[in-house]
Length: 139
Image 1: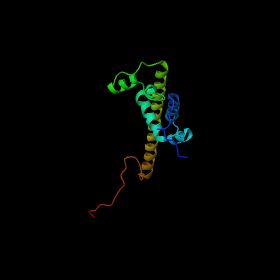
Image 2 (image 1 turned 120 degrees about the vertical axis):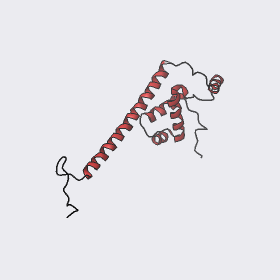
Image 3 (image 1 turned 60 degrees about the vertical axis):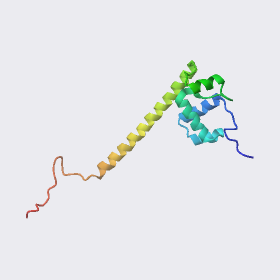
Image 4 (image 1 turned 90 degrees about the vertical axis):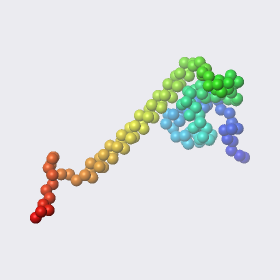
């Protein structure tokens, strides 16, 4: 029996949003994909759509409605936002900022460790401002 790909399956908007929320919360894409039995590529596509346009950018099951396709082709304004959609977008933005803070913390830790290694490798001098004496080359 062949493995079904996402082109043969249809997923509800809620299913996609839940999968994206798990990824944005920090779960590895491969773990979420394995758990939900779908290709990792789908999760990346859904995540990118969510980050670009929020929950409204996630299509529901089936083909898009004609009005949605026409708006997308013309680059028209998105449909009016609901309170839930705005809240979902804020949660996504919050998760994005938390990831960025985490990444910056990793970078800070890396540079602190590198600075400690450089400081430890330097040869200590006899005192502050004291230069080491050397033999004169004129003797």
